[in-house]
Structure formats: structure tokens, C-alpha cells
Length: 477
Image (cartoon, rainbow, N blue to C red; front, side, top):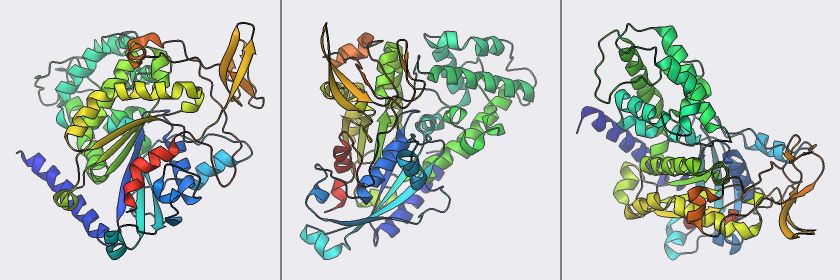
């Protein structure tokens, strides 16, 4: 065992001991919420907290359905070094006169929700205070894709990035970066301006890969696309060089500069996130914008599959016991959720869920072998549409109806953000394997809808109660 691995193990144990000491008197669930860009993390958390605070109708959430949830309320931040999730601000965006979707996640944040309940089991009635803290940790999924960098040298990472960028559909998007890269000599003296330029062109390439038409997912380093408070920092001023995995750089060379920046990024950005926050989670939901990948084609779907495998490889998975509770809890439940299910008719919801299950099957088998429970579902945290049947000469069409956002269009029809419309979203293939082979490409018609008119007490949703029961249900014994 290396000295670095001993230090890393000690950091996990230190966090576990702190959580264990607190949990003796105040049980808690640390729920991580993540997903790649546009997956709907902010909306999910806002809707989750609102549903629990208002005790909304959630039939599958057993403790609430049994009347054992007494009250729920927000508490002050338990961690002084984390920004608070702006629940009230996001709620105001959704329910205000303009009805806007809240801004997406750009940095890590936290919110503590406390629920008081009536214990049911004899042990819980005897020893529990009937109170559960739910610490919700929100972080960009792009940051999660950085965690494998802790196991890679700069040279290995560079080689992997260059190899991937020379395949379709990435190669055309990497043209400007590749041209500049060909002018860089890793053995030449270090050049700060060249490093900054290379980093910018590399970031532009990553950004192009993320555009909706391509919808690729595996795009580390995550802070290049979601810099947060690191924007403009020298920690982001590096890029891959065209080198072999075992290359050695002389002191003062361009390669040595890039290698040093990469190592600094891993030690000062990736590891603090992992050991300070990520390694202390014991529940996780991964939100997946699966429909965009399906519509972009087989390359996007395969890239998403690879990203999800990498994500699962970064989790500390397994059933918890006394040892893990004391020296660092593991994630014992992971839920994958295909979001925006309200953009499809309910006839396609089970198909969407089946595709997601097939997509994460490889990662799920590994997780279940380690003792963790895995589930997948199609989800809409806030349902923005209703269902309608439209009759035309060619037959009846199962449509969704709502208020498209201003600037959205279908064919030549441009929406003004005020008028309602019924839209046929297309249908998914009957067999999930067909969807993963790209047969859904171009068949789905996505339109961004405004939030519905929401009441203060309840938000319409699809399968939100299933998600809550899976992630939190066993916290109310």
C-alpha cells in the first residue's frame, strides 16, 4: 500500500468517525443527487423537498401513506463549508407569475430536511427519538466523471483522451484542438500562453461534444465544463498532449508543466470533493437525460453507457455494517432515473424504464455483487404536460399537451410561450435493445414546456413516490 493510499484511507475513516458520532444521537441519510447536464437535478431536489414538507399525496411512500409522518421542516446547514441549496429561490421561479425552470446546478450545495415520525417497530419505539435528518447533497455529474482521474497518470489520461477524440463523432468536433495540438512539442520549454490556448481549445471541443445534436456524456475533466468558483484558475490551464502512456518529461518542459497542472487538479479539486463529500454518501440518485441520447443516436447512447459504468465504478458501494458505519459508510442504494418522462405519452414510460435498465445492467450487476441495491425508473419530478388524443385523417395519435416555451418550434410553427399545444412526441421501440442500437434516432420530438400552474400544496409528478420510497423508505422503522 502506497503512502498516498494510506492517507486517502485515513481521510475516509476520519469522515466516517465524525458521521458515526453524530448519527448515534441524530440518525441521518446523506443523499447524493447527481446527473449530467440538463438531467433536471435542481427541479428534482426542489420537488422532493416540497413534497416532503407539504406531505403531498405519495401513495407508494409507505410511512406517509400509513400516517406515520408527523411533520417535516428545514434546518440550518450542518456543514459550514458548503453553500446552501437555494430551495426558496427555485420554488419562487417555479411558482411565480413567469413560471420558469430554475437555473441548473453549477456547484456543490446542501440542504438539511428533518422529518419527525411515529416509529413502528419495537426496537425503534424503544431506542429511536423518531427523528430523521436527510442531508441532500447536490453536485454536477460532470464532477463525478473526474473521480477515475485519481487512478490515472497524466500520460495515461492524455492517451485515452486523444484516442477517444479520433473516433466518430468526436473527430470532426476536435479539429481546431487537433490542429493546435500538432504544433505542441511536449519536450519543448514550458509556455504558459500555449498551455492556456490548448486548455481553451480542449474545453471548446468538450463543449461541442455536449451539444444536443451530439449529446455525448463522458467528457472529463468535469470542471472544464462546470468550473464553478475555479473559472479562470491556473488549475484549469492544462490539456492532453499527444504522448504515450509511459512518457517521461524533462524538468521545465511543456509536458512537465501539463503534468504538474493535472496532478494539482487531482489533488486540490478531485480529492477534496471525493473525501470531503462524496465518500460520505450512503444513498445516491443518478438522473439521466436518456431521451436526448436516444434521439442523438447510437454514439450518444454508447457514450452514455460508458459514462454510467464510470460513475458506478466511482461509488463506494456495499451493504453497511458496524465497521463501515464507523469507518466510512458505503452507498447501499443507487437509483437511476430517466428524467422528463412527461415528454412522452404514458404508453412509452415502461419502454423508457426498460431501456434504462438495459443501459445500466452491466454496472448494476457489479453493484449488486458488492451488496448494494440498484433500481431504475422513468421519472418526472414535476409534470409539465397532460395527455391528449388528437384525431386526424390518418388516425388517432397519443399526444402530450402543455405550454411550450417561447422560441420552441415544431416544423414551421413557432411558439410564443403563452399558447398551449398538443404535440405527438413519437414512440420508443418496443424492444430496448433496438433503442440502444440507434433505431430511436430522429424519431422523438422534444419540445421544452414551461412549468405548469402549480399550487402551493402539491406538484404533479410521475413516479416520484417510488423514488422516495426506494431512497428513504427504510429510514422510518
